[in-house]
Length: 160
Image 1 (cartoon, helix red, strand yellow):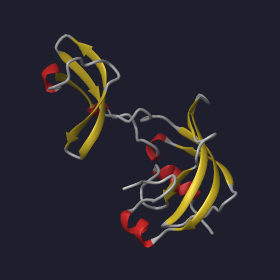
Image 2 (spheres, one colour):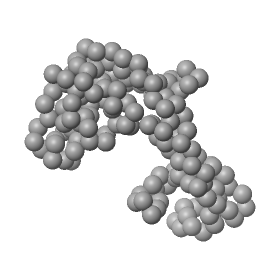
Image 3 (spheres, helix red, strand yellow):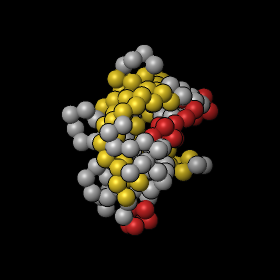
C-alpha cells in the first residue's frame, strides 16, 4: 500500500541539521506512527513521503520554510518578571505556554535581566534546514475513528 491521504504510516528516522549533527532519532526505539495528510508531520517531510511504500528508504531535505518556519524576530519579546505569576524563579531555558492571537504557543526564556525577561516564541528549529533519513516500516489503512480524530490510536500514536 502506498503512503496517501489518511494512511497510517510508521517510519524510523534520523533528523540532522545542516552541520550534520543528529538532533533526533527513532533508532533503538519504536517507529514514529502518524496519520498521513492531517498535519501531524512538518509539511516538507510529509510531501516527500507521499506515494512511497513500506520498505522504502529516502533522504528528505526540508527547507526551514517547510519545516518549523523561518526565524521570526516579532516572536521575541521582553516582558516584566511579574508576568510570570506563581513562578518563584524564572531562568533561561524555561518553557511556558502562553496565549497568543493565534492560540496557545510555547515560549522559551532566553534572557533574564533585572526585572525584564526575554521570551522567544520561535520553535527551537525555526530557521534551520533539516535532513531526515527515513525508512518506512509499515503502511496501513486508518480506522474510521482514527480518521475522525485526525491521529493514530494504539502503539506509537495518541492515547485518549
